[in-house]
Image (cartoon, rainbow, N blue to C red):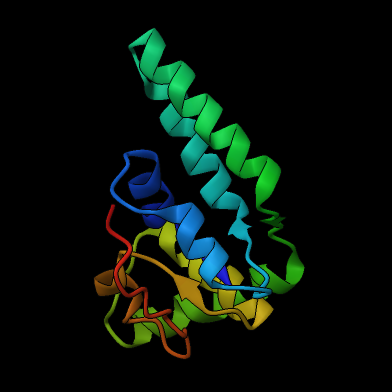
Length: 136
């Protein structure tokens, strides 16, 4: 399963019980897309308050230590190009980072855990995880 940025940001803000949810998955392997790592690190660098920046970096580095990062290789690039063309044919667009996340999940045969169901529901063949009650 690929975990989307939206879920991780909500966890960093205390709106989602990420540790409990991860434990509830049992042995289900999880990862984040490489663009998600970039998005999270970008949020750290953008923080203007030193305390907020330190807190974000601590959270993100702990995540990166605990959750593997799925690389974006040729297999993912091929799926990305195919998906991008398909969405244009259908008259649907999703954000460029979301497209990379979706392509990563599809190329790996993984479901996607996201709070952004509205955006990702337009991606053909992408399995979206039912997240249940994650709120803190």
